[in-house]
Amino acid sequence: MRDIAATIQPEQDDLVRADLTATVCVQGAPGTGKTAVGLHRAAYLLYTHPRRIARGGLLILGPNPTFLAYIAEVLPALGETGVRQSTLAREIARHPVTTTDDERAAAVKHDARTAEVLRRALYARVSADAAGSLTVPDGSYRWRVPGDELARIVADVRKEEPPYTVGRERVRARIARYVQERAERRSGPRTAAWTRRIERARPVTACLDAVWPRVRPEEVVADVLGDPEALARAADGLLDDDEQKAVLWTGPGARRSWRSARWSAADLVLLDEVAGLLEHPEGYGHIVVDEAQDLSPMECRAIARRAAFGSLTVLGDLAQGTTPWAARSWRTVLTHLGRPDAPVVPLTTGFRVPQAVVGLTNRLLGRLGVAVPEARSLRPDGELTLRPVAPGRVVDEAVDAVRAALSRDGSVGVVAAEADVPGLRAALDAAGIAAAGPEELGARVTVAPAGVVKGLEYDHVVAVEPAAIAEAEDTGGRGLRRLYVVLTRAVSRLDVVHARPLPF
Ligand SMILES: Nc1ncnc2c1ncn2[C@@H]1O[C@H](COP(=O)(O)OP(=O)(O)OP(=O)(O)O)[C@@H](O)[C@H]1O
Image (cartoon, rainbow, N blue to C red; front, top):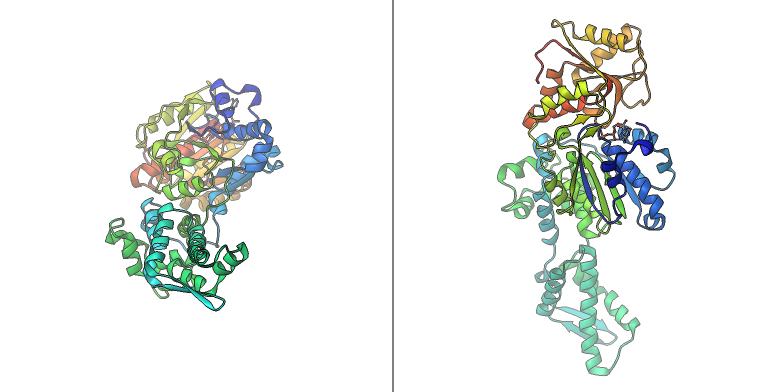
């Protein structure tokens, strides 16, 4: 990708220069410059609002570390200006990921209903009944706060819906105020120091520990996932029995304490949700989110929490959604991002993918289960070569295609289903062709599994056995969307090597 400043198109420029306070969502077909627009928008905001951006902070979120390395190469200047470039996983990593979920459990954990389950589980700890009345010592005197008064204070604070930790301190302050009013009625004004002493009195803290206990996110999540009864109470009417069973920790140590818990990637999203209920996280003035079609509702909420007072640039392509929870509509994504009314602007003019390839990929578009406008290419050049071969000849043909590609300039990306990657690497090696993995940017030849090439581009792409790429994840059109991503990585030439019928 090069700097597009000289050739920026009016539709791109409008997005780059949108007002700092505006949240915009860009539905961009492959190679229409979404990422370029996002990065230039970041640069533009820094340039036009240096102080506000310095104060609020600017975050660029990409899907994986390879992608981050790639964008750091595109606009290295951004890296030097305090713009944070990260992945959401990195932003929410309270613990290392030490276990994985099966797809069913991950799907439930990433569902927006789980946010409500966690909220209920957290607030189930708040209960004025737990305390009875409270007696606060004051020298030789004792003040009594009756149980119903305590209950009223707790109920009032709950209604105000402050973050949980703020709520606890607010209850403390209201108890002290109640005592202060009684004391002043009896014998005149009290000092601030006196009030502080009442607030910090041991029985007051003990009472708070009973009615509004201090709690860690880990305790709440471990409770919900480790205790079937706690889960049933919190999930009643929200998750059905199968869904509850799917997320419950099982096996030895299932009822483990939060201290020894092993967390999955989805659990970290849950922990972040609870942490956000306890305390609002520090936010950013602006967040650019790339590949946003792949975010789950719970991930969107994690981003929304970090942009509570800021704005967002949301970039993506519904046709390239490949996670199990990939969005089918931008309205849904924007709603979970807390910006339900943000405009969705389409970009359809492709700079990367040549016309010869767009003709092919537009044929796939109708089968992807999403409504997006067709792409059109600014590039009349480009070459598409279909290489049908006999079964058993696929790898050799792919090696031949790479050899031919190497007689011309530019990078070559060999992209295949994950299971086929080792065989291809070995065959290239045997043919004396040095090939790098996808994480090594700038290599002449790269061999990459289909799952990691999103957002990347190669001058020449050799797509190996599309049917295998598509069936690796064949639920709900995801495999075909993965294939769509692969075919649209080509800047100049695309070779399709296949023994099986093409799925388009
Ligand atoms: N106005 C422009 N002039 C010239 N080149 C451009 C322009 N806009 C984008 N490009 C180039 O087009 C290519 C694709 O851009 P980019 O990667 O930003 O697209 P994308 O929409 O994010 O693609 P994808 O969804 O496929 O990842 C890049 O090489 C980029 O430099």
